[in-house]
Image (cartoon, rainbow, N blue to C red; front, side):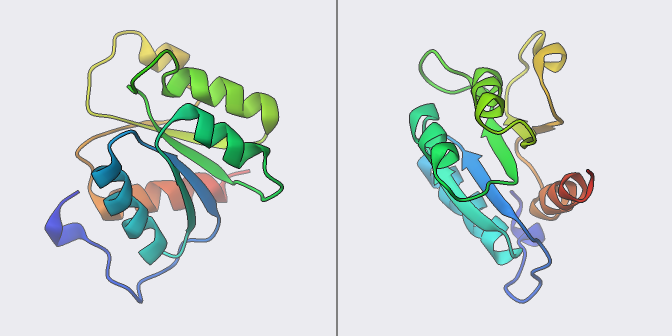
Length: 132
């Protein structure tokens, strides 16, 4: 996230509920704020169990934005598979700061690289949510 790309309050155009899964709490807070400033409703989870609890709640979730590499036995790819068992039409976007061999073949959505430009991330999410 670059300082010059920070979205300012009042530039909100996003619509939808994003479940953002990121184990780095500082990054999760910062990017969650960016997404909220863009107009999205955002639920943040720092582990897969919390993410699944959000998905099992009654509230709709339009998009899962998940880090690929997370501590423990469940990475973002596995989480997205579990999430789609609960919500078949869930759209998924992955974030990673690592080169993970073979991940492109397993991913069920676009993979965006960290660090990421805030405006680019918001525009990609808007684009993906606009597709049916």
